[in-house]
Image 1 (cartoon, protein in one colour):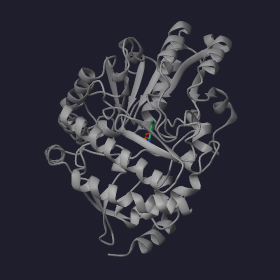
Image 2 (cartoon, rainbow, N blue to C red):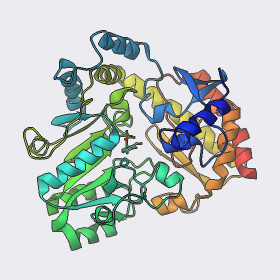
Image 3 (cartoon, protein in one colour):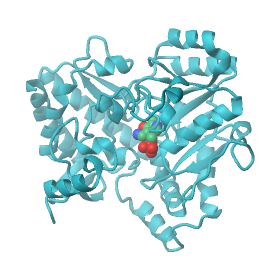
Image 4 (cartoon, rainbow, N blue to C red):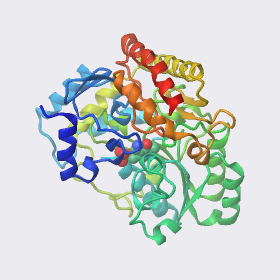
Length: 433
Ligand code: PMP
């Protein structure tokens, strides 16, 4: 087997940056990406045979851990009946039913293939249903790479320090209003000025693409109240949080809020159990604006693909209360050990955590991290040293300080112990950076 470096050199010749998604290139942390050839439970193994405890979790889908036997068996069963039909089949309905029973407000569902497609379609649907043009989003939230949503985006755009993306026209950008997250006054003002032109406010239920940034108490409810008052829609992007943050049930972050639901949801990651499936969902009267019942067009050759439906259904069926309790407890243990290690090494930091989703930032303890400006102002130069010390100790972290760490049902005490033992050395490396 060629080395990681040899594989990367060949990949760089064939693919821009050697990757099919930018952050995988280790651009902000430096070094050669590990080329993963196997994943099982809480571990991934690279081309050189090095095994790591995995905290990337396929960037979210691997809620049950890699290669969960029941999920794998369901995928095998589906494969035995064909890889795709391009026609309706019962497993689409099964997964849609599961989503509806777990997510209050998800009355109807449309399966798509990626989170980007889900948010892009939700935005088009909101415009089509309201007859309005303006979309409000929050800086640092990432809603995929469709044109109108790339302004001041988090995730890889934040990691690379880009303001947005080349190739997005001014006309598209001008219909997206970007506000600072958690700024209630700015939100109220924009509705006072443009309330009757706003089609939707799109927000991550709990932002996790500028690091994790918990919504201030009442912020999501304020979005709900203002959108309702002005006839705009609220799109709750739960691509990251859906079926992962579950303090009040099995559904997404919206389960934590009481007394209201958004008009539209977007799901991705966990809902596909590692295969390419995502969804938008929401109120029947809005969802019925989608073709073929309505005039808002969306279609997909691979939408509702049977193998992906099987992986998603098996994943949600095995995402029990015990699974969430386990992940929450392991995340709490890792976050607490991370805080202690950084404190002992004298590294100023804060840890932002909602349920099992957490991240940390350097040099932010004084003010905390409440929005994208706070996240960007951190001492992110320390992360490369931290990341590589963890990698050396056999722990595979997201190669960006703006990403959350993903634990899974398969992260048992041995895996968590390995993470915890690696933390003091990484904290010391960060202190010296
Ligand atoms: N929305 C959110 C909140 C996300 O975190 C992501 C991806 N990380 C997306 C949308 C886009 O999803 P995908 O990468 O599947 O297109």
